[in-house]
Amino acid sequence: MTSSNLQNLRVAIVGAGPAGIYAGNILTHTVRDAGGSVAIDLFESLPAPYGLIRYGVAPDHPRIKGIVNSLHEMLDRSSVVEHRRDTRFIGNVEVGRDISLDELHERYDAVILATGAIRDAALDIPGIDLPGSYGAADFVAWYDGHPDVPTEWPLDQKEVAVIGNGNVALDVARVLAKHAVDLRPTEIPDNVLAGLESSAVTDVHVFGRRGPGDIKFTPIELRELGEVPNVDIVVHDEDFAYLEGHTPANNQLKVMLRILESWRTRESTGASRRLHLHFYHSPVEVLGDGKVEGLRFERTEPDGDGRVRGTGEFREIAVQQVYRAVGYYGTPVIDAPFDARAGVVSNVEGRVTDAATTGDVDAPVIAGLYATGWIKRGPVGLIGHTKSDAMETVAHLVADAQAGALSAPVVEGDVLDLLDEREVAYTTWDGWLALDAHERELGANHVHTRERVKVVPRDEQVAVSRSGALVL
Image (cartoon, rainbow, N blue to C red):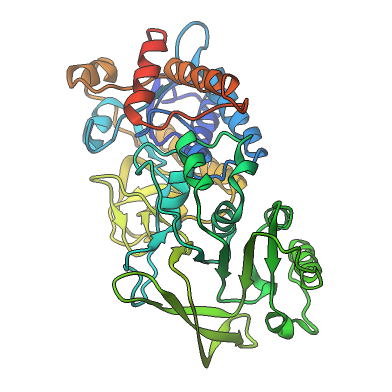
């Protein structure tokens, strides 16, 4: 690899979650290893970085701090090199509103879209839009202190249902069932803690279409569920009838089945709250007259080919709230091609194409426009997949730069001058350091002494960031 055409590259990355940060880090090292140089601006619609790591993970998962620390080190290390900024965080800027995609193309050699997926996937059944029916992503955003959701959440019902068999469903169910006192040591926002302290929830029901041998949880998530204080786990013997002779597909499933089997023999402790796990339940209708009053399911069974089929047996269960956790849906960027069916930017291996359907290898490539992370491949996989995504996308970007396939910027000057001219109250990396320090100070002075207390309102985040930040 030569350094030809890799000198003084300017790249904009849209989205400062793991996908965007990994892409920036990998791009920096790849270009430098090839003898080139690159300056990266990392645009984020929120005032703070880290995306779903900050706003999509339950606050009682301390191991996530390790991921945050890793992302922090990547940005902090690359923000000041030889007294100049090679990577800049530019927060509170919405691409498509504060600055257009075309305006980025005019100022950068390449643009990488890493906007992720923050909306709930649809569940197309009758009654799903009744009052009392919610998307899990909205609830997660609430308990994580996202600045763009209401500060209050209705937790005034006793029996609630969570539809889904993945980690998000488990997180939602655990937070609903958990007693607020056990969340006090976490970084949960004060308004959320107050809401959970007044919660009327006594029973949380989790429903999955498949059986216990096909769950999409991870062992640590499942194990944590059984360790929640003063919450009984309820499973049903009928859901394990098909496991006779069943061989788990991997060691993770083997461990999880062992955990579930142990719960079958666990006696009730008389806890004040219960978390019920139901398998082989396919939702067909949300019941209610003007509000959620129940759910109707069809029982399923294995079809012998790795899937499930309906049995024709229908059941109804009384609940007053429903949370659908059936997946996320990609966040489109204005003026970027978007495959609405798949919920991703149309692309082939990270190169964005001018096509209505992603993966069309015959579609023309849009020069200088790339995608990575969930907006590239859909909302599946873990952090490791995000890294491999970024490596593939960056490899194509670098190859295109070396081949002379990128258009040089046609507008000179700093993009921050344009944002200043438009009076966009953008935040910076130094601003994030100020906000981070402020939240930690709030935690240290809190009555319960916590690691941090998140600042929730957007305007307050921006004010703290901009007043405490160093000048660029």
